Length: 247
Image (cartoon, rainbow, N blue to C red; front, top):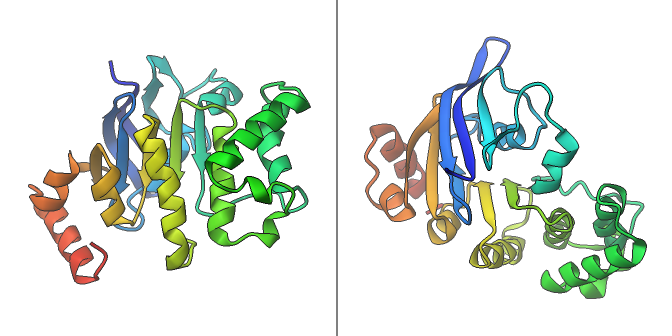
């Protein structure tokens, strides 16, 4: 049984159908990169897996437990499925340390001492422990995004969802964020990434999924998807990416 099972899900916004019977399996410790044209549903798919967006039919299961539909404990779900967004969403009136400590104290019931210990450990991991007492507006975009990743990791999730986390960054700041993701991947974290960073997807992914027309149009290991895609629509998409100098 796959760790994440997405089965025949459908979702629409008015007359626009985002998912048309989409299905996908993710194994434990896999790093799955979602690629595809703008509007294909990459971000929406991640949000459905964290309880931020409902689906209209089908189901999503994690470790055999259904996480969509009525009766789902969303707070419990978000303890095990962390998400990091394109916008950092840090609390501007809190220091870096306080941002990372907040959820473990409020949701997990950790003491202040426990939360501080966790926060220091994670800030050291992302090489920002020296910024613990700074406020977000004193950090670069790349540093803020690394803090957002640390905040998600403070909940000790089993799955991490990363939604276009480098899209808002200046090019020179992208590498420092991707290095953290690369380290998490090498440590075995199960991750799904919606990304436009094709070179990074080719390097770090266990599986690449090309989303198009409401379904997973093609999926496979990076070498196959980027080197020898089978479907014509995938070929056209990647040809455009290459011509734009992004692969």
